[in-house]
Length: 160
Ligand SMILES: *[C@@H]1O[C@H](CO)[C@@H](O)[C@H](O)[C@H]1NC(C)=O
Image 1 (tube, rainbow, N blue to C red):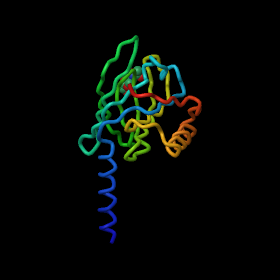
Image 2: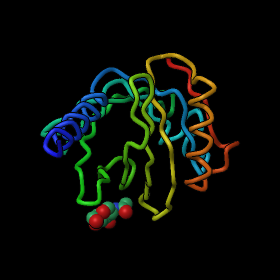
Image 3: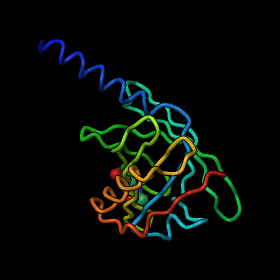
Image 4: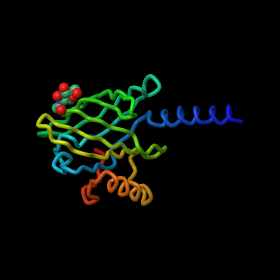
């Protein structure tokens, strides 16, 4: 019985990781420093694709940002740490973690420290191109409160 349970848990974990893989688009972003996620903000990240490697110890994220009228595509690799957070460099240092994993929506928390040492706490929500359901919207508001990000700082992002 225990063996079966462990197996089920192990399979569950593998399954959860594989749910990260695929094409995703940014649905919403929240930050305590809203300037960072404004229209041409450096952390207004438009996600395109996520792939897990090595049992998801490495997570590759492809996205683009729009700045100064320039659209640039970037791929970063997040490296999983012992505490379960991933680290990567983009506009400074980032420590992020997937906190909601479902088939239709993923949500990540992120802490960015830029070159001036400014700390920004963010939430990135990615989906399959649909608007957030009421239920998921409520979950993101709850998550924002947990992260001490004002709920009025949640920005819907239209995919372009
Ligand atoms: C990022 O982290 C590295 C290693 O901890 C550190 O040397 C560097 O100064 C950090 N950069 C910023 C922008 O905080």
